[in-house]
Amino acid sequence: MSTTAEPTPAVPGAGTGVWLHGVVAATTAAPAGTTGVAGTPVRTVGAAGLAAVVSDVPLAEYGEEALRRNLEDLAWLERAARAHHAVVDALTRAGAVVPARLATVHRDDERVAGVLVERYAELAGTLARLAGREEWGVKGYVIPGATPPAGRPVGGGGAGAVYLRRRRAQLTAREEGQRIAADAAAAVHAALAGHAVTARRHAPQDRRLSGAPTAMVLNGAYLVDRDRLDGFAALVRELADRHPEIRLEPTGPWPPYSFVAEPSAEPTWA
Image (cartoon, rainbow, N blue to C red; front, side, top):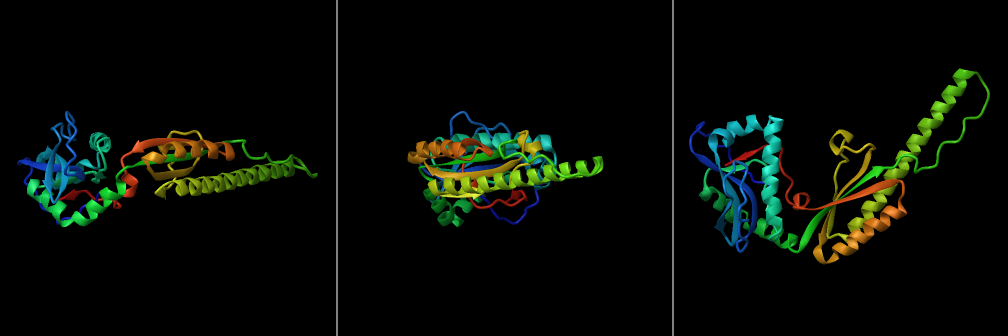
């Protein structure tokens, strides 16, 4: 969930704000015992038949200027992201949720309720679309050697010529292997998308982020009806056998981050 609001300066160190975790149906209760990014209990703010799940945060750390500064601190950002995700993840177990983007902070409950009223049609429609469905991810990685190896270099010439031919053959084989893996990834994504309600293909992650020893060629997200999850899992296994050029790794279920409004890179203070 993404919100748009006019920036409002906060007095450093004064009072508290309200961090928005997500929006759920009014009948969904906040998960008991769950705390938000500042360690305060999560609670709900209701309006227009919807409920915003929020937690209180001190403005000294989560006010507009403080947020912009803290979001440049990777350690702080990781802690906040983990705490925010933990709340959203707990909400998904109770029903459909529209996750808020990270660092969406409001001045008070009245402002939160106003967002629910102003964006009722969009939020209610998204909740209806997500009900009874889960987001699953499938990543695909190149398997070295799964493609036919390059033939032995032929032809005469000295050692330099032999080296150049060998090097050219290696590069050709690598390019061919990458092409074959990319084609396999496209075929896998198309098949999985056909089984899902909707799908998105994200940019592959860099190896430093994925932690995998080989290149990622597929980073897909799929919104799947819960009563079709067994069939989806079976299809992943079938596709893995059909495409030995890539290793498939299913992940999930996840909160439906991939299937709500595209978030902005900027924090929101309202």
